[in-house]
Length: 369
Image (cartoon, rainbow, N blue to C red; front, side, top):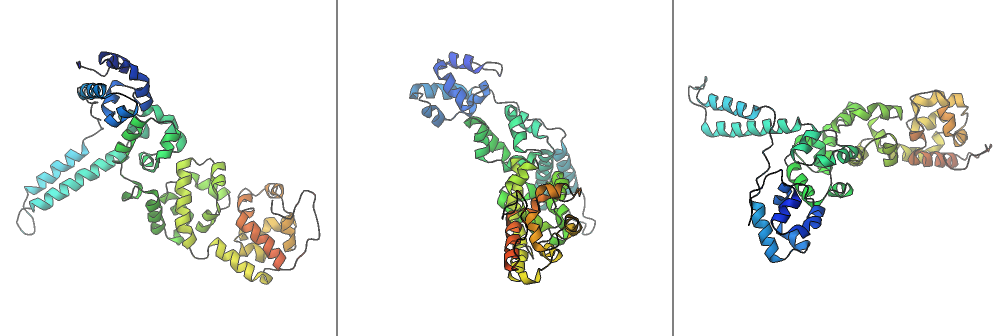
């Protein structure tokens, strides 16, 4: 028979009391860490671990008698306070028509106020507190490594991320249940692809790089992008995942950045590919290093290349990363110059212009290094 159970009873003790202790290991693998976790075990889970019908009925009947976890307590009571104010408005005469406020309108407004206050309360939570509230704090370090910085970041976590951190089935279901209540970034979509599209629509090209990163909650990486040579919004499209890894960007932020850039940046006017294609088609025009650098949007570094001795376009084929690093220009980055798209364009421009290599420097190949 089921006995009264408190949260202090160990899962092993509870199973012994129900003559089900031989299933302890299987239930632990499902994610039973506390006695209250038994309430989240489904009959299909029990069937899967090989529990016979009699034992399943005994388990489920006893699990129903386990007390529910204490309700999550949030700081403040703003939603109820706002609702009380709205209710008070309903008793006041309308100053313009001397009639009472419409009851339906007041009720609707009150509900919206409560929902808004609830959303604000959740968004103000610390991710660590949110995990503790739902008994998921065991995975706090995993989520931090994944890139969770704000509670809204939980909405971007995929099932494959949870599996990769070895989160058991019960905790995955609990995480999904409560993460669905978190207001999404942008206010309307939990889907990362739709959120990226919303950011693309919200950011005007003229607003530039800062606003783009702010929209994507990536302002913490702004200085790194600047150091890596970003001067225009379209420059972001030239970054590959390995570049983002090298700058220390976690997985969630990399995923958000790459998807947003792939959706928005290709549609910007005068994209990197368009500029390069134009330069390739009219390569005879790019007969001098400054013209070539202008075609590839590298004008800010013309003085540095002049100092390196780039007199003709063919000289670019001899430039090494060490040359760029030794130039002493903190804002210069080899990443954009050695980007595969721009690098291949450089070689094609040299060939189309009919310029042949006249010098071979030891360690320099025909490819861009």
